[in-house]
Amino acid sequence: MLIFDLQKGLTDLRWSPFSSSVFGVITVDCRIMFYDVDVSTKQCICEQLIHPTEKYRLVRLVFDKRVPMIIVGSSK
Image (cartoon, rainbow, N blue to C red; front, top):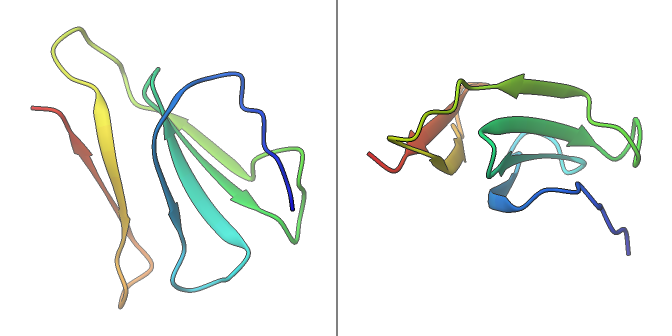
């Protein structure tokens, strides 16, 4: 069992349908982070800040099952 302490609250977490070792998370401060446990269990392989505003927050992360693409939904 692995424990990931991101020091932030999470709004969503999804495993990739293309790789059993890759997952993505959305944090409450509007960051999208991807981890590959085959590469590192300590650091994310990609991090993207979506400009947070008071009007919305990111709430849903979905991997497309046919095309290597993600979809991110907000609260608005």
